[in-house]
Amino acid sequence: MKPGNLSRAVFFTLTFFYFSTLFAEVQVNLEDIQPTFEEEPENLGDSETGVTNYIKLKKKTKNQTTQKIVNLRALDKITAKTLDINIVLGEKKRFGYLEIIPKNCKRSVDTSDSGVVAYLQVKDLSDKKDEKIFVFNGWTFSSSPTLRPFDHPVYDLWLTGCENI
Image 1 (cartoon, one colour):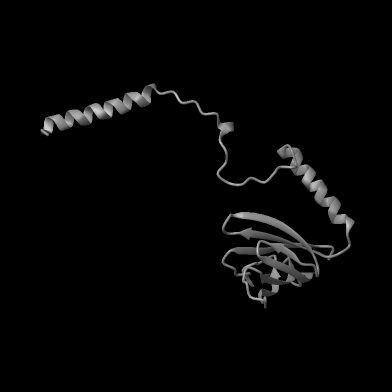
Image 2 (cartoon, rainbow, N blue to C red):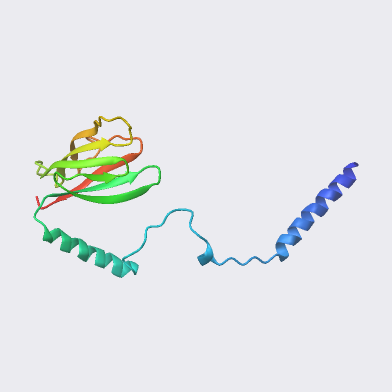
């Protein structure tokens, strides 16, 4: 093929694609597009009233019990989902393959720090062995979570507070 014919072929091809995209009308309804991630169901309704309803609900449940409750925030690093977990001392709760058991929760002794400390035991149940060992067994601090961090390849846990202490 001669160089002149090649440049004409490229010119006509580019011109064809340019005009075909120029006159093509594509209408997309954005409400018909499905998300590429999982969405949590919104039971709270309107965002502004939902937030206030959530705060009122949390305050009501806070005053109903006299048991010590440990508040944790859990992160699944694979799905990037977080969950606020409230566990009564001594009870077990699961997050993914983790079994979390809070043993104690107290206010920090340091007067300049208003945080809380909690003693947690965490087991990883993903291993198929019969004997489950703790992947974390110790004190964790809300004011500085990196002081004694929970180290796991899939999950992260942070102490956010304690109730009724």
